Amino acid sequence: MLRLFHRSEPEKAPDWYHTAAPDDRQEYDAFGPWVYEITKESEMPPRFRFAYAQHINARFLLKIPVHADRREMRPGMDLYAAVLAIDENGISIYRLVENRIVSGQCSWGGVAAISNGSNLLQGNLSLLLASGREIELAFNSVSQRLMEDAADFVRSRCASPARMQRLAATVPNIDITDHFFRAMLVMTQRRAPMPIAVVHFEPPGQRCLDRDGRRRITTGVLLLLTPSELIIVGRDRPARSLWHANYSALTTCVPLAHLKSYALREPTAGGRRPRFHELLLYFDGQEMFVSCLTVPETVLARLDDLGIAQWDEKAESSIEV
Image 1 (cartoon, rainbow, N blue to C red):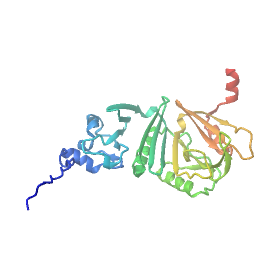
Image 2 (image 1 turned 60 degrees about the vertical axis):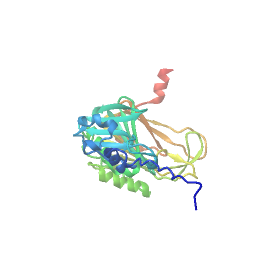
Image 3 (image 1 turned 30 degrees about the vertical axis):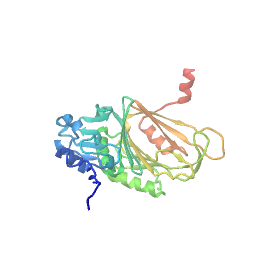
Image 4 (image 1 turned 90 degrees about the vertical axis):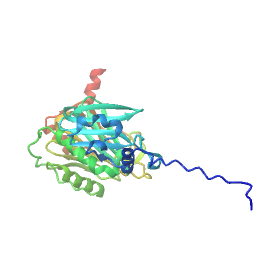
């Protein structure tokens, strides 16, 4: 029977994978949420390859992927958002910003403190600089161990000579009653080259009022001291709503040599539930505060022993007036 109508064959979709360059396919095959250590020039993302020769001997040369679904990406696209180089001289970071590379460098003397945190699959490495700036790198927490290794190397290069030859024998024996904080303590002890003393601990789950007077539940805080560092372990915020879970973890390490002064801000009055004291720490170009439901007596005593000045906010305010 003669066919009066001929159905044309559907047009084949372009084979974007096999038509791509071999180097682009290789980079695409390895692409995922992981932070990679770069071991050879071909592993350097094309956009950043100009910087490879300068950092070929870096202790850590890492590429951080873009935050995108793999199915949306293709070989030849910009698959990496940043490259981080850490060597004996300091830190260099290269970022892809609006189709151009922006770079910055910092020597070890310019790093005042370092924070490493995570919240489920979101990780964050933050460098607090003596210039007052902050460098933040977001990454997928599947690479948390690699980023912790990099953070440990940064700490080792920023560490100054021990302010204390040994930890004071008067540090009380504080029992860590919470599973999360006990695990964080064990992990910190394993990664620290020096002995660690627990100088303040507040378990989570205590009723409180936040800064705005809202009823909240504390998330807990743990303060640790080594001969050269003050280590602050907690969540991303000191309190949470009763109905909201908190899965974050944040560790901040402050070299004692960078601490210039401190202050203890008393809580505001009002309400039946307790409010937070705020331990303010002032160091090179930076300031931060730690929320504590009770006065961290042992921490204050150790800071006084080290000769770190106590800053009187009330006296400063009266002078300004």
